[in-house]
Length: 301
Ligand SMILES: [Zn+2]
Image 1 (cartoon, helix red, strand yellow):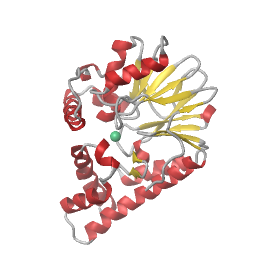
Image 2: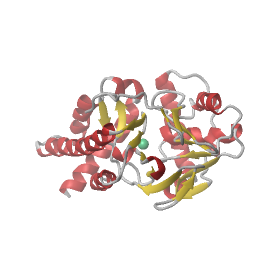
Image 3: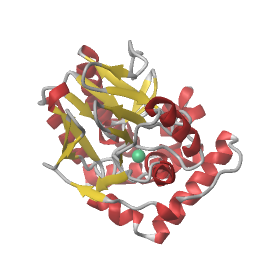
């Protein structure tokens, strides 16, 4: 659980500016602009993508968008990337190799199309053009690779835990970590939800790695940039949330609850307040029904 942050998530200094250009809360995208380059970090949903493109244009003016950089392949982060090239012909999509493989599977694209459709309905969003057939990674990156963003460099960290395809980025010039959901999913000012769909320990390992890094700024997915002590608090909190959720599930299991009952208990305790407004209940169940048995199996064998 979290207290509110002291900032609105947008950030600017001499080297870099970062603005949330997402078309809708939950479908967030962060436009990073340096002296000579620009990129979005994540790209939101399909249905809100054209609104995101207008937000990007509003900031970039006549400048080009160079990259759409995806932290992972989930539909609420990746779908909008397919809408960049019609507006910015030279924009290149960057992801992990694993995410690139997912985008190349028609069944995965179909699933993204369907979850977008159901989320659009949830939000009461009108018609939109489906471009997911064009979603393809142009450049794959992995641990140790460096993306030159004109004056600042994004050093790639493999960060599996939320998904197998998760990556994060460290910008040494800024002591900034561009985080991913392996550190938890920012849900509202009062709640960061652990979301380790691949594994509990592998996620905790990544958060512990982050704890050892020299970080003064942190881009929190679905929120934006926090700085100074708030970064350290967030990272500590991410670790605490991860352990708490694991204990919650294991205690329920040991008290004799079925997986279905644990999922409902999890929903009662965690899926409330602002989260209900920004996260379709269907998506909550998809995550929870996967996460609960995974944790029981990993911890108890
Ligand atoms: Zn995700």
